[in-house]
Image 1 (cartoon, rainbow, N blue to C red):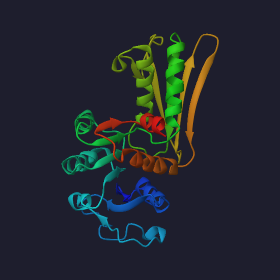
Image 2: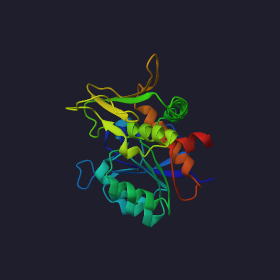
Image 3: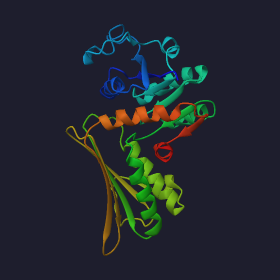
Length: 267
């Protein structure tokens, strides 16, 4: 069987380089292309020199040229760059793993539409175990319907979007478990808000500081007791390895929009 050829968008960024590092230790995958923004200074340089890994892959800013060399693109670029890669992948029939978060509603709609024609994993969090937290939260939210739910997420000072995509996903999990329309009940922080907490709402609070990797805590709070469900990521490498698992999952997969839960079920 031929190797599944994988490209990395955002190849010069922190996550992109971690994916390339993980590809070095993935004998079942072939590193085929590395993409960066148009006109970036790194264009034309070795994509693997930082690892002392001898390959012929160079940093490129031409997505069309890169797509001739790959079967699947892993996108860790930027929220406003996703469409730059999505539309060419759609034309070429190239599978995508989108690990970037913070896209606007228009971009999310385009991802959904593209998934009717190509297989896409779009995940707010590519950690293999975060779907376990989501399942636990789903069960707890359904069983403890009268408990208040608050979600607290913490990330490093450089994260550009808030709240995190994972926190938004967890709020969707709670809303679905309770049959609520999510958009009407989520409260983002409570700055300058007067009055008691409105029953049935889901609170989300964001913390940014230092070099925190990722921490998400869901609190289900009753009058006499509470449950806390927490996921802590200590090393970003888990997202890189998760993205490779997602790429493997997409091989020979029919068109559709898939999640980390789908990957976990197939394992």
